[in-house]
Length: 61
Image 1 (spheres, rainbow, N blue to C red):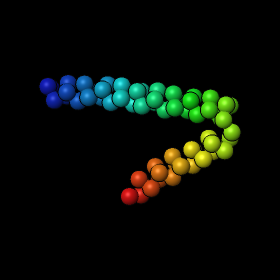
Image 2: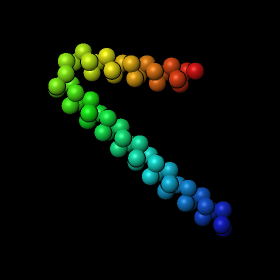
Image 3: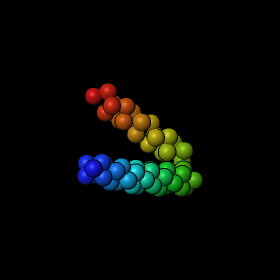
Image 4: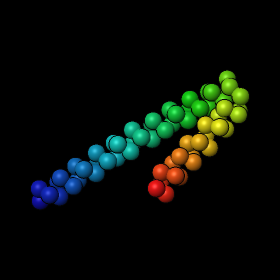
């Protein structure tokens, strides 16, 4: 019974972590959008592919 309680406790913790990550992602996206308006599209375009490529390489590695 105690183990089941521990597992249930771990689930909400993971949800909280995911929510935090999602918020961080949303904030980063919002910043990128603001930068796109102030800076040339080239800058945002160059940043986006770089992040995607790095993530893909990390996953493959």
